[in-house]
Length: 143
Image 1: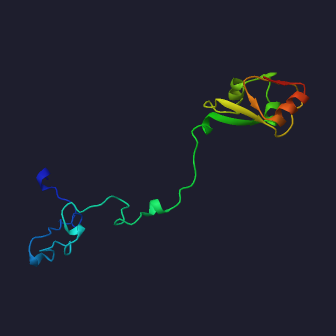
Image 2: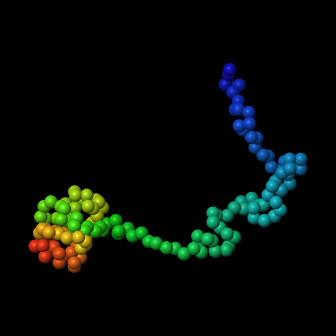
Image 3: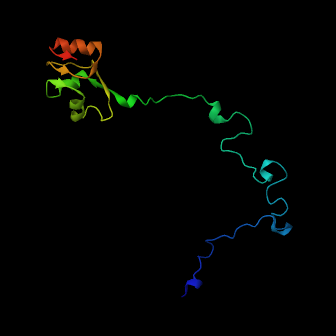
């Protein structure tokens, strides 16, 4: 066996159709492109989604939704989650170490959900009016 004897398996490679090579081929004259029109001519292509000048589907349909880039920077923490944390002073670093917020969070807001039974001091965090009242009622403070 030699390298020049190697051939692909029978039937695995179909021969390329040679269009425009005479009437006997079945694809002579117009070469399967039909008569006249955009697709019969060289370079007669249009961009994806083009509908011949009609308003395309992707522009006819209503656009909905919006994803804010600021959303990743701000996060919420619930009051009952603060109760499970150790330490009296709670800040962004403490919340990140506890796994309550991710590393991209720049603004963190404490929301009134659940209860807190001990005094904690919030440092560098925002709090809703209800959450602030609950923390102060427990003997804590919000900076």
